[in-house]
Length: 468
Image 1 (spheres, helix red, strand yellow):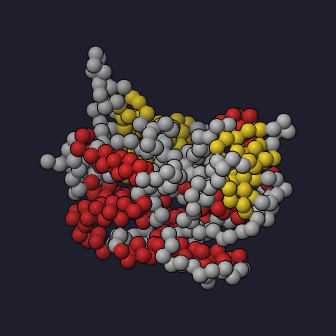
Image 2 (cartoon, rainbow, N blue to C red):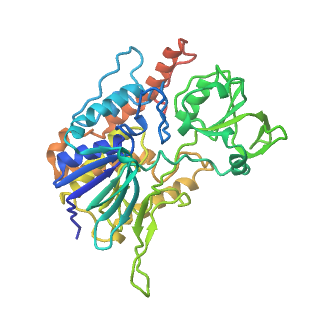
Image 3 (cartoon, one colour):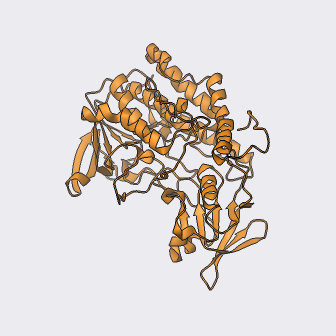
């Protein structure tokens, strides 16, 4: 026996790519009475948001910076039935921040015109209601931070990651953040090298896309070498640069009498006289404004209290109790789009939100009990434990929401559900087949080639088209 869901009034929180495609898919494929999206900024875009007004200063940080060039080709930035325009540059097929922002704004325009998107509304609270529904509190920045309260049958949260910068748990770091917080920086606040970096000794932590790009941008400005601390060989394309010196993981931070930082490396060496430590160490999933009813009533009062669902300390790190990384198992009128991290997040969000729109329309059946809906999480946790037992590297891209080699299997399962419910979508959605995966892998060689061309240098060695 399975369960059919039929909420009628839906609120989507977050006007980035995940929220926008969820809005479109719920309106086009669902059977709902009312679907709205709220965004805290004055326009859509999420991490791809841009405001060109003079002296504009956002209330919220974003990982995007003005000269950002993406790492995903237009095919995988295209929502179904809405192709991303090819960038007008030879040898540089990767869209810029401005081009991606323009695509998202154009995609959102008809929904704004029809009143489905409300901007400058910051969600400050989402609470589960006993008996059904969700109370949502919002601060209306259009009206001098007036607080609104609304009730919705179902809520989609598309603000999972990018408000929550992750810092590794290393001795001395917390004290350093408290005592010299301006010297400990994160990619979430990166806007490019500026005067504070000129001639300074900088240590960059990490070697994924953000860390690699920050190190490369600092190299012409800061004191060299730029130190880059890594735990593993990077799978992310970056140019070799003699001004960047790779070192091992940092075991401890200390400070000197002149307020300089010393980073103690795992191999026993140390880097001294550091001015700034810049973290490109990613984000963790957390929704601080969300409260759900405790699954188990109080044994004496039989009442259920409101509790946070997410926490910085949840182990393994994840949004807990999700069926298919989408639906909250104990009350499947709460959903998350964007919880799984993917190399092609636009494409995956298109698929997961299509699945959600059909599930909430009663066209895809879900397991009937919380216990049955928790089976996915339990299976994923077992797989994760097996992966970690095979690795001695804590940064080996092994975490609950990064599916890695299991992404194709996950996506194909959702796609099969979608096509069974609506055969016409077979012609619309990305195929998630081997040919698509080959094109996705080929992006890395293409990105490397574009980096060499942009830098005006010849490649030192052939690019391995099979590299990941």
